[in-house]
Length: 408
Image (cartoon, rainbow, N blue to C red; front, side, top):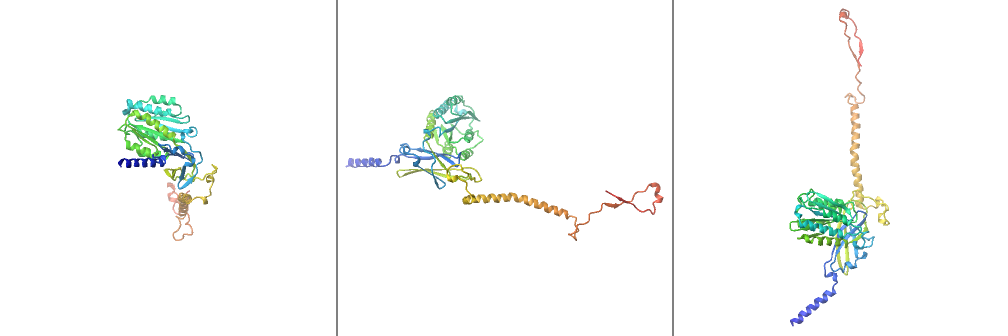
């Protein structure tokens, strides 16, 4: 009896597992890794679909994604393919920051250099990589290039010494990537705690979020501050990895390279093509056989004054709009500008009026208090003066009339 029940349960379990979609049995993680706004109002999303069974990702195309920006559904304007299938249209730019502090001396720095070199070997024809190393200071080992030999040679010359300016290195990497469009990322590895940077954790997070550049963090050994590295990666759209041994670094770096190259690029025209300085929420949804997977991320196009675009695309949403066609927030912004302009001009007008009043007051300062309508006569510049007589004529001075002298 027990065998019959056991066999029945086993058969039921197998039957149910076969009836379910394969991807429902394994976790599928959809994440917006980066939002490229460098060509705004054209916006590009880089989406990772971690699907161990490959049942969802193998069927994805332009119709498999739904994109909504700030409540408005948008149409994709380019074919959706993994980045790895077209390196010329989908280049990847990476900054590698390598910890070369004193604690990395020995086998750890050698393994770190091997891992960085392995990452460069997976670079495609149109990709580019820059290498930074940090101890007390941040050193540029190699500027952006796609020459694998140059990168390998530069990396091999790194030597361990000094303290740990971890956040300063990331900050430099973010700023180096600022003018670069397309898929960009910083890979930051350390075996310890920052003790030398002028930039702190929050400053680094804020810079990365403002620029929209993901940071991939790698913690080597138990001395690394794992909590902070996890949060740094999570908040910026990157990924966090930990390894107790430097021997695993090459595997981790290779996984990061292949993961980025397997991402999907979704391109659309923003339904709000104004550089208005306001944040927009983007939701990407994948629906397949009744299962829904989605990811949300925000971006800000920058700017303060709403810019009305002329015809920069065939999309009618980008044509010039009259003020009466602006939405309520844009109209309110215009009114605010007018009010601010009035406040800026008012002090000038008040100053001019005050000077005019002061001038009039000065003109009447000499008026007679009893008659304000007529000015008080100007004091005469003529005065009487009695000329002094010569001492010898004192006797003849009696009875002589005083003479008038004009004093200028």
